[in-house]
Image 1 (cartoon, rainbow, N blue to C red):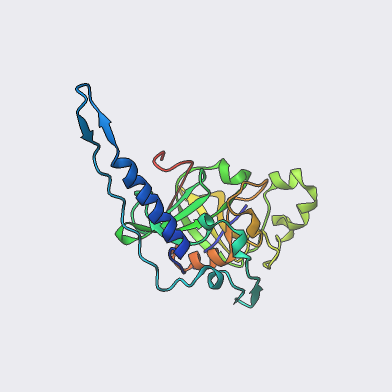
Image 2 (tube, rainbow, N blue to C red):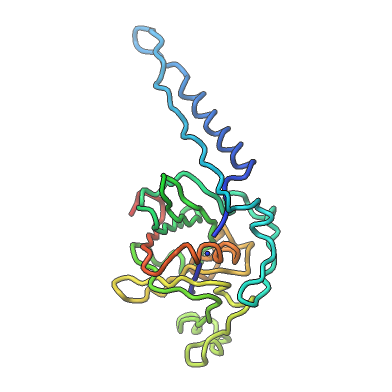
Length: 247
């Protein structure tokens, strides 16, 4: 399936408290003592948890971030964000990727997409994945991007679902709209100047975020792909990997 991307958000109060609690638990464990052969008690090295990242001033709360929005003449419905696990909502986190600022990283093992920023931070988005989302990995670039793109299913998909022939390249594809599988934006991934047929794109199916479903590449909620789109220029490097540190 295809893909595209724009800007907003920080850690929620709940996310902040969870992070703080995790840090406290780590510190407590590191303070435990160990025994040596001579029964001398030796303190284990103290592990200092990383400081919490600051809230992005431009990000509102989750409800406002995922509220209804009018975009390019389309009325994008709001998302019942309380039904989306917090780990898949847009937020700023400490960068776990080690990639240079401006890079995109898709970790298919956790259903997260990272936009790496300066200062050791990244904007993290939840993603949904399909068969195509697991079929390709590696380093590439965002060759180009589109707002409200057409969708043209590949011939392999049409072979499995003949009813999609009406949306084939031969028939002009599916017109943009709220029900288009590519959603509000698509980012097109090329490697060595060749189309990988792999996309990062929006989706009206917010309930598939954080899940693996039968079709699609890397899908974000429409509000998130709109946010990401303007942050990502053409030629942005992208890494798709199944687990960080495995590229």
